Image (cartoon, rainbow, N blue to C red; front, top):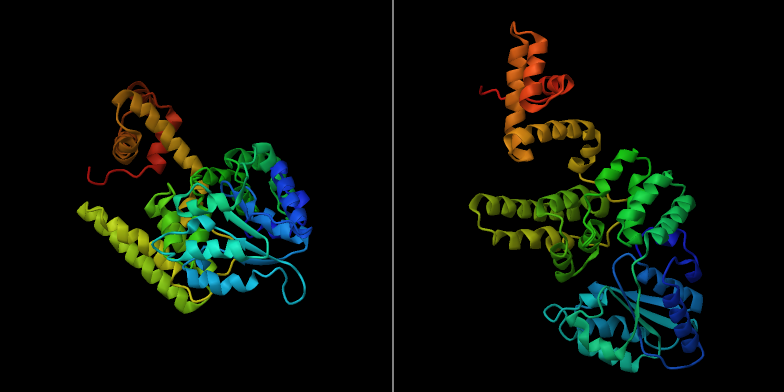
Length: 413
């Protein structure tokens, strides 16, 4: 369930939420260990609810040796046969029962995974080892052939109270300094995704409480960190580009996220160079699309910034470093007071001009600033100037002073 979970959850009984589902998994393991035949499990549900963690802890609880694979291992029938079939015997060399854990099983694609369906069907029919499959959506068309062959267990999203329980325990276990108020805000924004909430807690460690504003910018359709995970960890073309397509984070902002975090994931200098070459190409296509209004270029931009970056690596990425926010987002907290004051003034002006806030900030406030600056440098009385702007736009004297000191005037005037 993400790189931070293994540090502090030691037992399947410590998992928060989805208690009936956990008992279902334990009953499955008891039956297997007693010699009963069971269909493979299909653990499915939204991202960040504990599916992968539950599979790992179940294997530990049952005394099984884990043989884990993910989307990168489903590229074809030959790969499935060579990696999974040898482990499908009931025991390994040391006499321990193997458990095959197939994560991201819904990343199968007819275009990129030729022969995978038949190879998986054969594996299910012949395996003497328990099989646990994990998916976000078991109804995905690409894995429709598995529905009758597996036993579905749906993990539901956690409640805000359950997420708060998770991140509170995580913070205590890892010595993270974070206020109760901030954790409550993170839990409320999590949409039941405990993994992303843990990522938020880690990012807030040592940060001012105002930085919580940044977390609100994150997309929950596919969490931006989940997209980054897919891009930096995948070995296929399909998974990264699907993750990018499934996120509502705009392309320019996602490019900044990838740009900032390439050095945090790739350790080989040549990998870093190749990844930045791909990102540079994506940026060029983004600019061409904007200039020419020919948005077919976005197709190439998306492929280069997701799959291109993913396939630039020659070794598995380093996961020890946390993801960092792009500098443009990190700067939001430090400029919050200025942005708040500017917006408040713009809203007052909007009542008189009926223009958009963006237009007022970009064009009207600099003009008003110039007018006020010129008037204050003249022989006109200061109180008269304040009265004028108060009557014209409803501005307080402190707001006029703010415009004079902080808003860049229009030098063309």
